[in-house]
Amino acid sequence: MTTTYAVLSEGLEKRFGAVRALRGLDLAVAEGTVCGLLGPNGAGKTTAVRLLTTLLRPDAGSARVAGHDLVREAAAVRRRIGVTGQDASVDGDLTGRQNLRLFARLHRVRRAAARADELLDRFGLAEAADRPAATLSGGQRRRLDLAASLVRRPEVLFLDEPTTGLDPASRNRIWDAVRALKAEGTTVLLTTQYLEEADRLADDIALVDRGRVAHTGSPAELKALVGAYAEAVVADADALVRAAAVLDRLTGSEPVLDHERRTAGAVSTDPTLTLPRLVRELDAAGVPLVDAGLRPPSLDDVFLRLTGGDGDGGEGSDEGNGGGGSDDSKELVA
Ligand SMILES: Nc1ncnc2c1ncn2[C@@H]1O[C@H](COP(=O)(O)OP(=O)(O)OP(=O)(O)O)[C@@H](O)[C@H]1O
Ligand SMILES: [Mg+2]
Image (tube, rainbow, N blue to C red; front, side, top):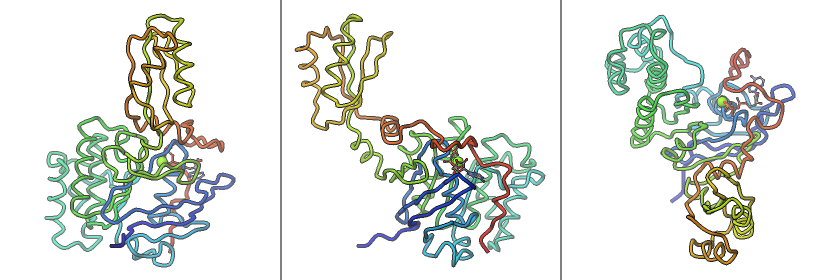
């Protein structure tokens, strides 16, 4: 059985003046899966989405999206995808219902009114349906955006930070929607800064760092790459330094000390490290142990370790979300 890729990019590059936002992005998203693009501020996630959704033209490289060439068959790509960006796409003066009906008619969806109602219902927007979109809460608005991108039943859905700034209830609704879409066979590519989100939703994660994919794998594979997190809680302050020395030797990485909690911890790069050995070695070094542990790494550990975790890619970018006032968004691929 061969894998079919809903998104397959090779060497995508994009420059904004002196800033190299993408420096050869290789990405493969298998059909029917959820892929999380995870990376610090300025890593190039939004740029990748804008390229892959034909809103920007790549300077170099190529990609196929939903079976079509991104540049040569841009119109065909556009017909098969949906996108919810960091900027709202709905009209604030129209109600939720009017917005969805308008989208449905624009895209010649049959039974437009019924489709609009179905989506309103699905996203818990029934009571917000008849208010102007501009008066909706952030969470309602985001759900309306998502609903709008689904009017045409896209084969591939791109979501740029779908849950940033949402409360847990709204976030859960979006997560449920993503899971439901996947169950229906839709491929989803989402960007996020929330490791938990990627961990819960994504079949595969692509760690984006400075315009490239630094690592890919399932959440479990990425965690295995980093190894476990070893921790020792000690009885007195003096012992903390000795515990740290042991951890340093056993884990191969620099321990972090928490003096208040008398705890030393380090991410282990040694997959063979076990809890009994950790305790034995600490004991042999005369460390008065209160507690010791070896827990699976969180994606946080992975993220910090593999990207350096300092954000903004070190290229003097200060823009954060969105890329605001630029008129690059008008650079539509014809
Ligand atoms: N329209 C633009 N004009 C100039 N520079 C841009 C533009 N859009 C993005 N950039 C720069 O390209 C780099 C990548 O930005 P991008 O928005 O893709 O990052 P991101 O990973 O989405 O970040 P965030 O997590 O903050 O949303 C940054 O250095 C950014 O400042
Ligand atoms: Mg972004």
